[in-house]
Image (cartoon, rainbow, N blue to C red):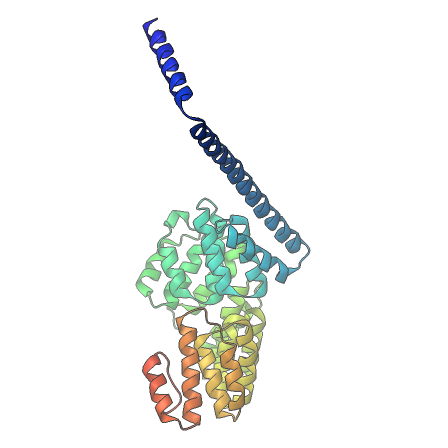
Amino acid sequence: YKRLCRLSFLKRIGARLFMALNRNVKISLGILLGLILFSCIGGTAYFAFRAYRKTEQLQDAMRAFERKEWTKARTLFRSVLASDRNNETAVVKLAELARMRGDPPEEAYYWFRAGKLNLLDRDYAVNYCDALCRMRNFDALAAFLRGVAPDSRTGRQSLQFAFALHATGSEEEAASLEESAPWTPLKPENADLAELVSVLFSKDDVPVERTMSALAELANSKDDFVATESLLALANLQERGGAFAEAEKTLLGAVRRNEYAATPRLVALCERRGDLTRVVELLRVYLKKHPNPDLSVRFAELLAATGRKDEIPAFAKALPQSDRRFILTGHYIDAILAFLENDMEKLSRILSLIRDEFQTHFPF
């Protein structure tokens, strides 16, 4: 009863105070309350529209993907990420599109990003490892799989780990892994990969002819990684034996399986054979699809060496400016032009910027 009396007293005091306020103050308070209410309604409407727009963008991208309009779908999914950077669906679809385009670096980037967004989906980690294999980035593959608990790795990941350890010279770690053979029982889809690891990294003294025969058989595998690595290893053995024409034919087969990884090997072989015109044409096509700072440098050097220096400025202008290495590539190409024009002052100034970033073929 006393509490009710107190509340009633407070209400009476509040009412008297409100009545005591002059008319202007009441109007101001009314306007303020109206503005607050309007802001709340406006904010709610804005966020509702933004959510609707995000959903609409994603639906447009999905429709383009289903119609196989790959370029349009990629643009739309990237727009979705611009407004919602943690949209898992957009990230996954961009990874799939990169796989279709044969762009392993971009594919690996998006699968890794998808794995960070959803740690429970193990397929993202599996796909990330496959993309690293297509990149032939065995250092990154070994580092990643070291961080995965042995009982959480799939049989394929364990075999990829063994391959990466051998490829990066971690023989003791590879031997320890092979002793436990975590990929057993071997699934049929992993049989070719297990055979490839056995053929390439056998400790037995196997005749070269027998190894080449085994690699030629594995080159027909349905597993693109197994086929590509078999062809690359076979081409290496053929070149060592002086069968350069056969090695080139083998590398062309590897390019058909994995253009990104095999083309630089074909370029190197053609350059060793002195076919610089072929090298220039191979790099011209490859660099449009797969920009690479080191290969861009070599391409500019070869344009100069083959009397095509007039093409160099246009090529340099088209280089991406996405990171420091490409910016330095542009500086290095400017240095080549300064050297050809005998402008030693400009050459010295540019070389002070790039220092020893590249292995040069010019006598700077």
